[in-house]
Amino acid sequence: MDYMILCGTAILAVVLILVFKQLKSNYALPLATVFGIILMRQALKNLAPELSFFNSITEKLILPRTGNIILKIFGISMIVETTADICRDANENTIASKIELIGKVEILIITLPLIKEILKIIESLMLN
Figure 1 (cartoon, rainbow, N blue to C red):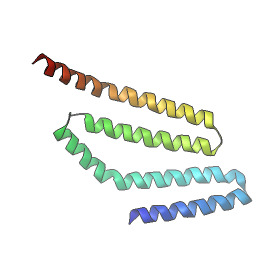
Figure 2: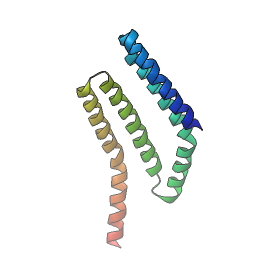
Figure 3: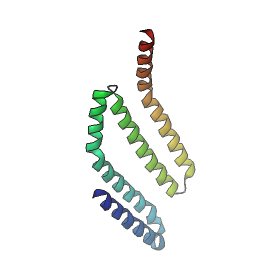
């Protein structure tokens, strides 16, 4: 049911933004940003119990730090995508592409310990 509330809020936001674009165009972007942050926060709040369950399962079944790494990657990708979308809404495509590049580099940096652990496991299997 929460998705219905989020979708209704998004439709209301779009209508308000379109009205503000006609009346006071300089308020449209801040309004879109605020609504975007509110919607993202609520969606992540609804997702939190499932993410903690996912983290506990990955701790038991896979490599110990895998769950945390995957959740960090998810968080980074959500923040970077939202920020880039806000920049695109402001017609700042160059900044949006740079933010996406920064996000990709950050994700690569975060995954390096996991890659090292996987390589250690492969090396130990090859030696036995």
